[in-house]
Image (cartoon, rainbow over the protein chains, first blue to last red):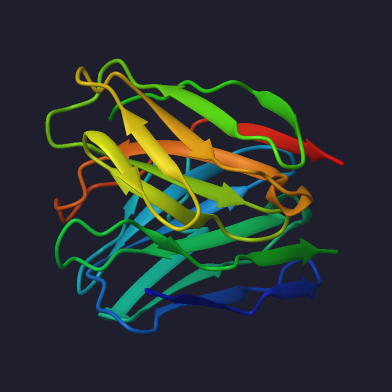
Length: 116
Length: 112
């Protein structure tokens, strides 16, 4: 089945550090990928839609200069949390969908980001 | 985007059948209904997807009435490992820019 790989699974770093998270579709091409954020005991919140070869579309309230998204190929999207602060600590999850047919979204296993 | 409403939580016992119903009154003609399961500190895992009537796979069944304003995920003979959060989503899958908005989900707790 469709697999989405997310790396790293966990990051612990100091305040002010920039952190890059990768999302790869392993056995299909994805022109569109999505980035979510999830706080404890809450649902997933869509942050942005990553579009291959063009700018990402951000949801209202999400700072595009804070959360940089690059979708340089049909199998890779990256999310960079710039100058991270403790309030950026969260669980970040990406998803992708095979654009062939009526396929569902498949999700990565998430990245636990902890900013000290 | 169609909004979904699910019960916040449900309790069950091992071996029982569990039915989780989701309301999506403003579902669009081209929307599909998809259910996901999420364990703590993991990404959501696809369970089943359907458009109308009934869909069955090796882990669940999905019942969708004719008006498609609701759907029911049926988990046969649950086990302790089925304790998780279950999300119902509606979206049009063959639109390049479609996005999926998660509702609150249903927290299922299976007891021994």
